[in-house]
Every structure is written in C-alpha cells, then in structure tokens.
Length: 473
Image (tube, rainbow, N blue to C red; front, side, top):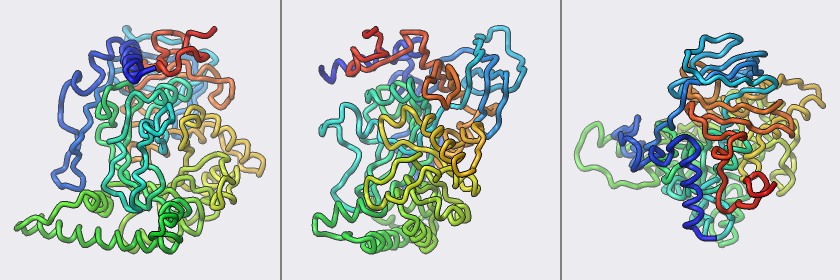
C-alpha cells in the first residue's frame, strides 16, 4: 500500500460523493475568493484563508420523519426542506418546489449534523504511525505559534468514517495537550478535499488550545525543566500572559499613533487575538479546582475561557461554569485512566444540563467520533438512574448546537433553522440506538453519503476488504 494509492482512492471517493466533486472540490478547482473575514490586524488575519465552496446539491424534502431540530424541539411526522445549501423550512407540512427531490423517511429520524468540538483527525491520522504523528509540538511548554491546520492531512480515512458512521459534518481540529499553550485550532467541514483550505469552515474563529494538569508537568518535568508541578503550570501561563499584554499594548499604540511597528511575534499574535476576544480559548482540564484557578487567571489577564475540554469534574462546579459563561465538553463515561480523571461520573453531562450550564459531548478519539450519538444515549441512561430525566430532543443540543456555540459558528450551523447551513443527517432508526446508522448525510445541502448507493459510500484504500467497504459480503 502506498501513499499514492491512498490519495488516489480518496480523490476517487471525492469524485463520486457529490456529482463531479473532483472538478469542484476546492482550492485550485473552485472559484477563488478572499476569506469572508480577513481583518488587517496581524493577530487575526488568516494568511491561509478558506477556499471552501459548497458542493452542488438539489432542492430536497424529507418527509414522514421524526425531527430533532438541535435546539431542543421535536416534530413527529415532520418534514425538512432544504435548497441552495440552506435550510428552507421545517415543520409537519412544508411547501416544496415542484423540482424538489422527495425522500420518504417513514420510521426514520432527521437531525442536524453532529459537530465534534474536540478532534485530532488529520493531525493524528490513520494509520497511526510515527510518520503521521503531527498533532503535538512537544518541544516547549508554550507553542502558541503553531497552528493545527498546518498538520491536517485531508486524506485521513478518519474523516470519511466520521461522516459515514457517525454523521459528523463539522469538527474542530486541535493540537495535543502536552503543552500549556499548544497552538491554534481550526474548524473544518467534513468534506472531501485535496487541501486543508478546501475543508476550512469559512469565517470560523480560531481557537487557542491550552492545557492544565498532569500532561504539561509530566512532559516537561521529565525533561528537568519548568513546569514540573501544577504551580509551575500556572506560573508559566501567567508569565506568558503578562508578555502578551505588553505585546498588545505596543501594537495598540502603534496602530493608534503610527511610527515604527513593533517586531512581529507569531506566538504573541495568537495571544493578542485571545485578549481581543477574537480567538477562543479551548482548555484541556480535568479537575474542578484547576478549572476554578484557570477562571481566576482569565479574569486577571482579561480573557475568557470559552470551553473546558474533558472536564471530568465539571459537575462539581456547574454553577461556577454557568456564572462565567464557560462551556464544558465532556465524555459520557471515560474516566479512571490517570489520577486527575479518577473522580469522573457517568452523570456529569446530565448534571451540567440540569444546572443550565452550556455542555456538550466530544470525542478526542478517531473511533469515538463515529458513535457520539451512542455516547449521548449513555449519558441519558446515567441521568435517569439518578432521577435526572432529559428529553432525547433536548440532548441533541449536546451534539450540534452547543458545540457550534463554543466554536463561534452557531449562527450558521448546529440546528435545523431556516437560513442555516443544510448540514442534515437522515438516520435509519432512533439515533440513540446502537443498531442505528446514518442512511444519508448532507453537507450544505449536498448529498455526501448514502448507505444505499455504493458510489456514495466512500472508503480509503487503507480500508479495502473491511466490512462495509463493498469488498466483503
């Protein structure tokens, strides 16, 4: 097996996924325009702007389905109409144009596409070999100068698996958690492309991946350098934020008064973007006490923590997170694999929802991303066992709208609302059942996966001969 055969296989998959997709897939083949948001200031300017363009679709109405709209609503025997890449109407009766493709979904469910706020696909692609390990620049505790998008390999077969098996239409790719400040994240649409820019969600804000706890102190303490303790973690963070404040003041003065521009610092550009509120903090953190300290540090230096990731003890400080407007991205029941994760409970997400805290499910795993709907089902069961009964339609917010909010894209995707992107999944049964799979997945109204059409069941060359690939009966 060669890299060339994998790339060819992925390009062929792209070619059959949505009509002539290779011809309009992205980058050098799509219309070239500047980013929809390209401010002049150096800390927020994107020198690698999105060239994403929606694949061609047709007006489509899906009828006779149970709808979870992503905002907590449920419609039985409902209909969804989308055209020109956008949701047009949702209800028990919609007026579809005469040329619309009509799909009878009797006995099936329709939901917004799943959004994974914490993924490393493309940066830690499959096959998982050292040559592909590009997700963590573990050479310094502060690497705010690196950007996850510069490691994304679009031919990672994990992308098509997440689409076909998990109904994932949008995902945030983050650097790893070895460093206190690991670098910028990037938000991608889960489409076939030859370049990262062709997957990049147009206008989505960047994130800054931060980490606290065991990982940074273990990685750098083992090298006999700071940080080697939790207090060392915070000390390095604070010293770095102090430098960022000074850097911001110099640039603010230059932009107001002119003169000789300060020297550019790529890492400080990112931190200045955070201080300006344009880059969102996505913070790996497990323990409740550490999350509280990070919230205090954010107040000290004038930035906001958008979301804590993993957050296995978030249930202990649900009120604090709510008061600070900080979200929690958590697992259903993944805990106990290291000391800081020992106090995790299966009811974590249910407790956060019950307290009115912004919360969501996430994967952090190339396999888990394929069954995030089932992870939510586990949370619902854990909640019921302790008397927290959350409606299934409300829980879908954990899979779509809430991650969209924490990624700064909820105005464009995350729910089935007229005017939003037509990122839609038709499930062949109750989406919380282990027996249910995506039957069709649309991104911006283009049909990119169809379980009933072999030409729209793309697989990587690395997966030939696997069940579901068409080569094994």
